[in-house]
View 1 (cartoon, rainbow, N blue to C red):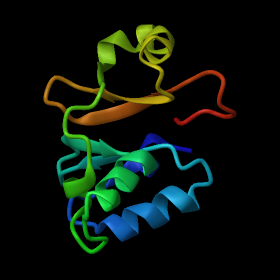
View 2 (cartoon, rainbow, N blue to C red):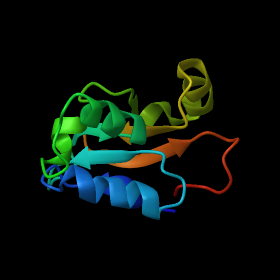
View 3 (cartoon, one colour):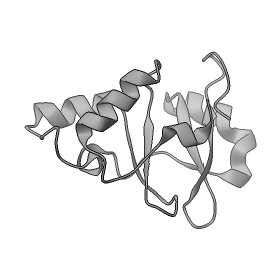
Length: 116
């Protein structure tokens, strides 16, 4: 799986994001990014579940269900990724450049396969 498989447009609906999370088989996370690739937030099954329980519509843009202050790492700190993931109890973290553009993703070693 490539890191671009995690990217989703902020205009996609919550329902479309749910389908994408279900389709990839892992259901881990999607990176909500603008057309330039700048990270706007991340969304997981848990984010969507909480959004729905709070009365959110499945037709609304996925950004309305996203965590807009997610954990991230600068691409120059890639070597710290496994420790960072373990420390924060997460499985995937977007790697960003100086402009906040998603350039890669780090995946916890305990998961099968590589993202990129």
